[in-house]
Amino acid sequence: MKRLFTILFALIGVNYFAQSFSGSIEFKYYTLRDTSLNTYWVKDSKIKLDQYSKKNNNTIEGSFIFDLEGKDIKVVNPKRKVWSELKSEIPPVLKGKCDVTKGKDKTINGLKCHEYVVKNTEENTIITYYLTTEHYDFFIPMMELWNRKDKQSIYFSKIKGLAKGTMPVLSEERSIEENKFVSKLEITKLTKSEVDNSKLAVPEEYKKFDQ
Image 1 (cartoon, rainbow, N blue to C red):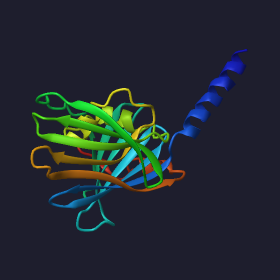
Image 2: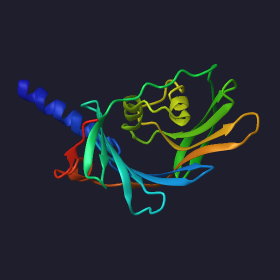
Image 3: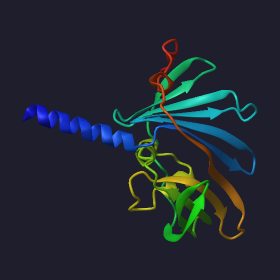
Image 4: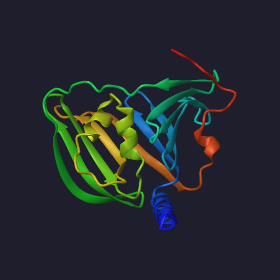
């Protein structure tokens, strides 16, 4: 009986990870000043975010490695060949109230998405998100662990009751009064593949930098 339960739980675990996304996700972040290219590498509970140089998209400027089970984040500097531990940030207190409304479904880059609009009049900010639910189980836990201070991340957290596996495919921030563009995040390429464990680890020759 004990062996039967062991096999059963092992099969459940295999099935869970088989359904979750594994591979790479390329996305761009646009502002009025510039555009940056980034890539997520995802395998089970490990995620690596590579941020490329704005001058050369072939050069990785820095990386974050997230361990969702261990609840830790590492920052990696390829140029200096060092890494350090990052504590999750404490988001600032928002002014006013965020109102969330759900819009129509829309297909973006072949993915069926649900539109959500988060509006905060006092902060003069409105952000429109197009969210897909295609087994991207890593995304919401990663954002909860990271606790980023930018409005795109903070306003996303105000959308309650999202299904497991939800991830933005496109999001755009604008000012309400001027209807002026502020920022945009857009997934440009999704590749399902097996990711080697070494891709998600700090290279052995890198030294730890204690701040």
